[in-house]
Image (cartoon, rainbow, N blue to C red; front, side, top):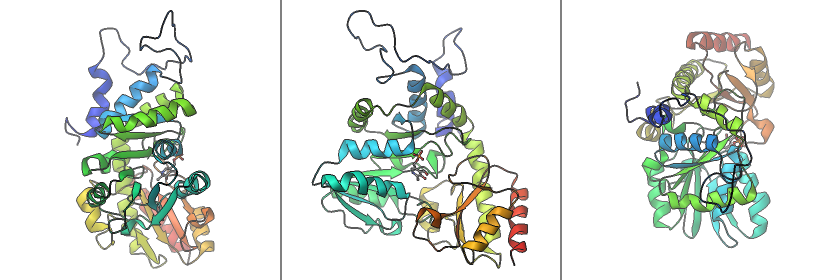
Length: 369
Ligand code: PLP
């Protein structure tokens, strides 16, 4: 249960603490691109690209949730891009995961390598020992997506700092409910709020958060000038989803743990990755820095054909990409070019009753023989 100082309690009560008599308790959507502006600008709202009251409310909620300040974006990739565009200059070196979300590397290769930025990659599990000399920025994703490898955030943060690099953590899979990178020394957190934060597979959003708010100034400048602005309607959907984040995620994590246990003991399954499993190579580090282990499990079946059959025949599994939603979904990650065996499945657990989900997964696996 959330204590009064937990991220979730701070998020839930942020709006009610600031209400005056007669104010709406639910967050109003202010759908205006322009605001009354007689005379000179004085810091009040004047144009939607510079600020919108609904968006600012949601940013404030995310800020208290993260334990810092937050800047909202229309997608997770826009949030990631804002950090790269704000901080990387020709001649800089960036160290990034080789096994995390593939579009992060695709963005660096397509846009930043041609500008003369040096891109070094390293598996998540080796991020601690990776050479960070001369790096401007280090970006980690732990647990990594889709292999669920883990690295020690506090250790990487100390080494990045010693090398003079900024540490950015993609915290999309666990969210601040399961893990708080800013408490562990990260300079910035980036998130795809499209996933568990919004949680209903009906909106794209993302954010960047930092405790040292001056780090966010170049990010805000880039957002304003590039125009990567989330709409107030989408900000509202994100807000509405976040209000139930903890209860959704706690069921999804419980489902992931139960699914991982069931998969581990099934003869059709060759291997399972889940940091919550005591025999997982990530478990020791994950248990130190995570409160729960996230909604995603990955595992290997014999080959792609069997993996596709499993996905198609599982009554409680939707064949879809993404994770963090209310419905359990799965996909063969090889279809996106991830460096995984062809029978590798990413299972993104939803909030179905745990016994139903486990029974359905087990029955489908039994039928594959
Ligand atoms: N980071 C991670 C770990 C992701 O899984 C994703 C999307 O799948 C992103 C960032 C990008 O987020 P979005 O799809 O909201 O742009």
